[in-house]
Image: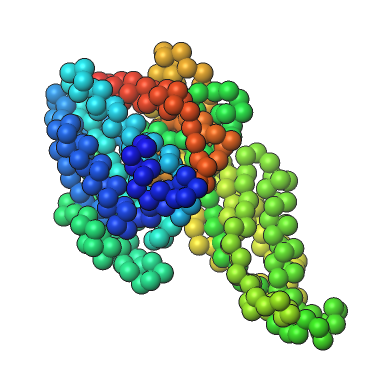
Length: 397
């Protein structure tokens, strides 16, 4: 993990390794050198997902897969995504060291563009793999410089020839929690029962830019003031709903963004997260009501567009039980937890059995250069992953 942290290292101790850049290529090359040492069969598909396969005693059995991603946020940390890949690598190394051959094949995957920072949408590789996203559409996606996914894959040499997707018997993903719950509770293992649903919105507030010194207060059509009121209301919506809901205004673009001009246009983003679809629908209704409330037709106008709708996704109960039993048998403290973040496991769960393993991270920080985790917790999560994969590899028919 620390070797990978050197690839794109930032001055503050984090990592900037955006998807399908030269730094991503270096990290992928390093991963390939490690899995080739283990004698794995390597395949790369047309969206750039890398699958390293460790043959099983019965090639007719569906594989047990694990993995995550190597791309990071612009100011990312050493552990997000990378831990899941390295935990899977350690599982395979341990089985090689012990001379253990599983009944089902094992697979370790590096998913393309999980973060969605350079290319949108998020979780692109797993979305294509499971058929939730169109391969042709994703290859045409462009970054801010007009570079397409297809061109970027070719530029770094990871435009594979294999068609994405194949049946998987079970999928496990180990990950840092990216939140404070496990650390606050003093718990080593999070048994993840599912992932929250998400709804994202683009909102435009249109007023009128005018002179800050000559326009009386009661004559102003201040788009930023209206957007600020909406921002406060967005926060209140989640607080009032409770029940593990989340609401965020994460981006705001103000025009003309000048010291002595009243803002005439604001673009902002809103996202809601929650464990139940009806709760998300109720939050959306209140967002629409707030936009109506703060608008003044002909003076302040709001337009709202939903740009993402990710349904709440439960994980496969028998595999969740496998993770829970593994933690219990290894005498690790553990608790059930719901993921507030999107992960590749969410798409995998739509296509077949999937589960996740969380470990604590320091101060709950993630998507941050200060992201950190204790070695003993990383080890615990990897041990639970090993036992879970062994169990699944033997019990699958």
